[in-house]
Length: 143
Image (cartoon, rainbow, N blue to C red; front, top):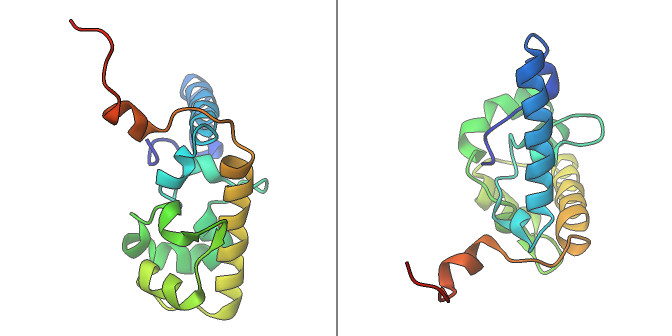
């Protein structure tokens, strides 16, 4: 789910596909805002977490060039891997999780983006069922 879609500009040549992707992003953002589902989402290359400037998190934190360079190393990092309590993990732990070096400017940008995601989707998100709740609940009906 996290990898489906992209920036809207990528779909300018197909009006139909562009409309589908716009609606898909809305669905994804609503899903992330429900039941802390954003914590289980991939943080990088995820159009559900685009900034108001329409940039991916890795573009904001690392810049476009470096973001592309470390993309493979960081592709499976989930939001929850970068969170402790209600904030971002330490710089040293971030280096371990991301498997790449971070300068202080990059760490501060990462921390800012993690906190933005937490505030936008987790802290102010609606209370609903998390995806894991459906796997553990006993069904009340039988087929």
